[in-house]
Length: 137
Length: 382
Image 1 (tube, each protein chain N blue to C red):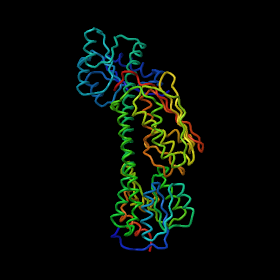
Image 2 (image 1 turned 90 degrees about the vertical axis):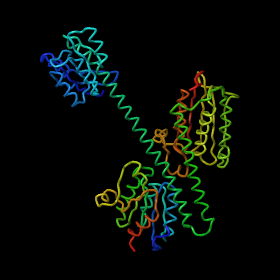
Image 3 (image 1 turned 120 degrees about the vertical axis):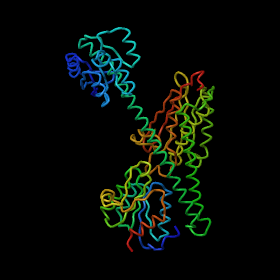
Image 4 (image 1 turned 180 degrees about the horizontal axis):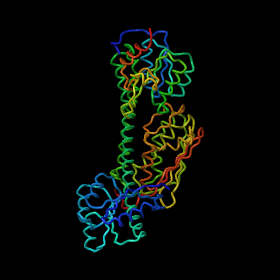
């Protein structure tokens, strides 16, 4: 976390949805240190309600919550309402299920409505790098 | 009734014989009501041993009607070849020389049955029906074994996920500390450390539950079966949750006779009460109550009923409840921790006592678990 180039996102809003309260807390703390104002939801349902609000500058969604595809659904809905907001999907399933997907190609991004996919063992440097790439100055 | 088609190879050097048999079978639909199946036959033919073996190699085949006396080799030699090459087919030997000697050596070589030439269509159908039953039983055993294998894989996949998630969380909390991510005030790290310890504790409990489950499933746990007073065990179980219940103002009540003896393993009864009561506390509302009722079971044993005044469940959730790692996730259950294995263990234990677990639940009103346990039989000390 220390080596990341310091760029402040003060005044930006991030929306984070994860059903693991600890992961949610960790991402919230991390984003707050980057300067984001963070809104959190603990379920797909809470996420859906938050999406109805004003456009956030960044979204981080867990994939599997009350449904196996909760993160996909949230990403899809968000992009429909706020097409310019970048979405990062966080998932622990890719390895265990061999159910591999990413957002590396345009083809993948057509159905995975996310701009980046990160493994659930979150490396915060990686998260910071993705945010720097996706959130415009 | 489902239709299953068996692939049949008819081998005979007499064209009339093989075409006759092929015609009878391809027009035949054998209904097996006890298996809920109608069997049809896709029949092909071969005129000698060499052709038969080539066709069999190109398989798979279900059923082989094999003439004993072929121009190039005897049926016995073909059987031998089938065994050597490891071909999997149920063979009916067809022979005009229905001698005991041939029958014995053919059976030794793996023939399933015999049909004496000449035979009537009904005789053919009757022999084929028997063979078809064997083929179907074999198919089902294979399908079941494969299903079990897949269930195990699925279990391991989910288990890996369930153990990996808290590891990731603990890892991230430790990194926060390592990077002084919350500043130099030591107190700022109390919460991350407390949460990391809680997640490690959750992993430990999951591993304990897994070991219990594995021991129960493998039947290798040495059971200490003796006359046990269920009421006394129930009191022990209640004591175990008293503090957690009191913290949330949940009242506990025991409704039981003075004593209720049954033959059981005390440790196993302890797991039953602990599972039922901790669930009743966890999924209760603040200021609710738990009623634990014990009564003798008809025919010996005990019926244990735990009624809570908690969240209750929708019917769809009740149906999923006993699946491994299943935890009902909704607005009200968030923040409640558990391994998702408790009810699997409870059901396995009930089965061990020839009993069962029943659930009645109403959302917003509460849930009642009823566990009936029969006396463990005398002399069972697996």
